[in-house]
Length: 303
Image 1 (tube, rainbow, N blue to C red):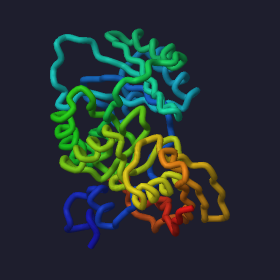
Image 2 (image 1 turned 90 degrees about the vertical axis):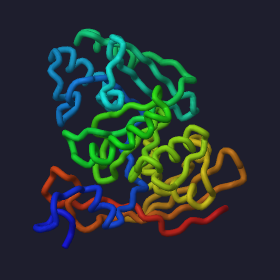
Image 3 (image 1 turned 30 degrees about the vertical axis):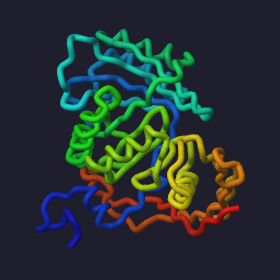
């Protein structure tokens, strides 16, 4: 009997994914710009879209976000801990392939203040700031995000209180707990308190591991799986150390070449097969069965 069937108690998509052994490499959503909006009240199931904001302001922010394919995420400190009266914050985080990632921060007390996000999307932002660690804890969207996400948010907040925020839905509920390090553009999944602290500690030290890695958000899924395979073979590396230099596709097969910027002689050829897994229930709230695309590394060779 599978989890969630009659007599087996409530269905949790993350439990089911673990029992199935769903692979996580190649599952990070594509994107290189994020808009964060601190909101200390309850989060609607549909996040920013469900907030009771002025329609004209919301429309302006949405149009500007869509123009650069930015994702809008509600954020809050773990436990919604009270502040010292400071206004809620907003931020625009932008990934740069050079590694000089950009951030711009501001505050808002009224709906009109959020219109500043539109100007920030067109500004370069500041380089050299530490990354932001976002933990999906959006229980109104999916129970697993709360059940697994909040303990991870607590563990990480105790270690890095200034870097860590709980955030709204980031995608991939069944991989909870999900952590996004932005604007580095790196997704981790399947974490708990202990593993999340280890993964983020290594990440901040410039050592990204294949374990728990969903992918880099500037790459497409098959490329993400290829880079994860290289990290597993060659060991942890910095965010900018590996670059995809060639990608070709023949049907369901991909051939992806990955070069090591830190050791220029190292190159890897990775073959990836993409296929649809059997239909299954992928989220807690969605009862319908869907077929997820899996990106399986068939071979990897060093040149």
